[in-house]
Image: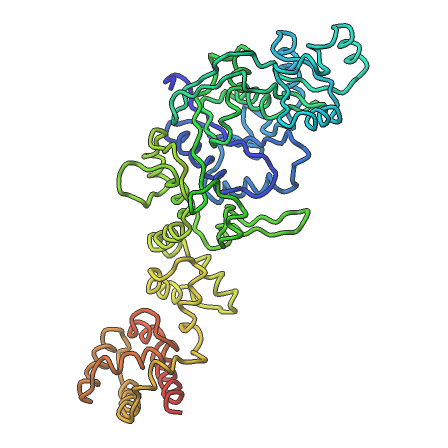
Length: 506
């Protein structure tokens, strides 16, 4: 890396739908590198393909980044000195560079209609527009100069294609993969400027990266086949010395490792692949996201960072600050990373345990409100402390704690009745009297009182702990039973023992 060049990286998605977790990981790795080097993280919207543009997708992308804590330094929303940050708003500048390439002999006008190209594809199954056939097709290389000019003057629809050289070795140094080499003879003459005047990805990405002084281009390995065209454009436009350093990230693979993880895999296996819920505005179809499933942004980001990267230690839990401090491109694997949803849930479970209650409280209170519960936050905070280690998602809170807010309406009698006897009935009638007079109603004192009563009755601890739990919560679950009783308070605890006992002996 040129030490004198300011680090400027960009995440450049297309606004065509939901944001795949692979895209978020690309944004994350760009963000971490920029912050580690005191540089800038730029969001650029690549909307040159207007046929695939989906309303609402750009705002959705920005919301996803915001949720993950990946705030751009420059973007369509944040502005900046290198705008506009939507390619559609930069349309006027691209043609001049395409025309410059034509003038210098590196590109040419092609007048072939879509029908003519379709006929070629039918005639030649592996058809590609290249050095092999360009002189047999309708373009400024095969047509006389006067005819070409007449077509241009007459407003004939045309595209501009790059003229890929024959038998050249094109190579670059990838920061992850080392030297990568391509044979130009196997490449086709990609369209640079479409008939509607919009640039293709190939031209726009090079022009924009140059105009925005991008120092490093980090993108998924699916873009590797495009790299030689981009290299040629950097050279042909006279910008080779300013070309960014490149790194191509490994794919995120299906859980079985066979191929790239797709939305269909998530639908089939029951887990999200988008960062947040995405509703297709045309079909109304809803695709669930990690956020709405209950993932914390800290856990989601932590999980993504370790898909293809590690810091060389056994540490797995990283805050954003720790990721910024530890991240390095040379620790990214060349091989694809298998997505493991169980591991993703583990990260969420661990982050629920790590985060202070006040960070989780808004989600918890929303869960309770959805259940029609209006609870005191101090009371909820105490309960959350008791059950945090049992939660995979904050949405699990209600399932784990409903008994703190409502008396059980059913009991796991099968766990108790087979071994129930008159002696136990007598014990619980006596304990009701004992507890009614008992003070102070504190956890440790309650446990001591209950155990002394068991001992005085000449009974075994194991016989009487489970029935008490079932009477209070309805089943064989929950934190320490005396913590539960202390929180419920005397009146509620006695009411539940009375009600539970009646259900058992009915």
